[in-house]
Length: 89
Image 1 (cartoon, rainbow, N blue to C red):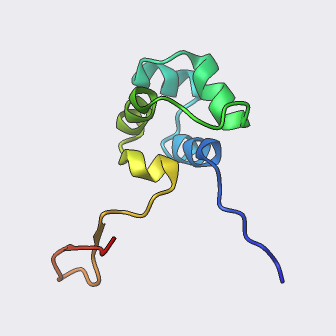
Image 2: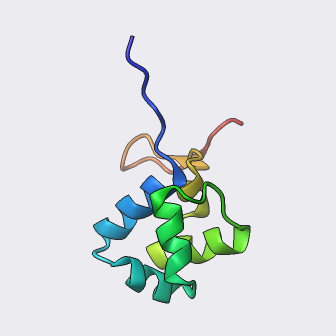
Image 3: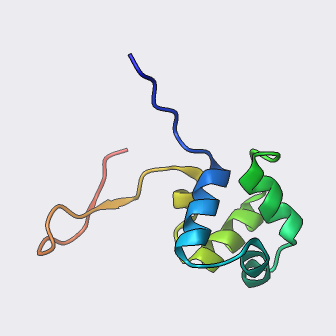
């Protein structure tokens, strides 16, 4: 059996940053953070971040903070015509 490891916060930040064609310096500037924080998170040197840091990164990447920490979205849309529905917790 092959185990599938969930990507960490750094992997998600790096993927989203590259998708938005930002450098680490560019992301840090947009988020109002030091490039050192972005670099350490992406390299896995830091596995956690303060809530304010996560919120700043999420805003800069135009995603919900839950996307960065790997939590499921609050809403689910089944079809394009359907309205979002709240997921059961």
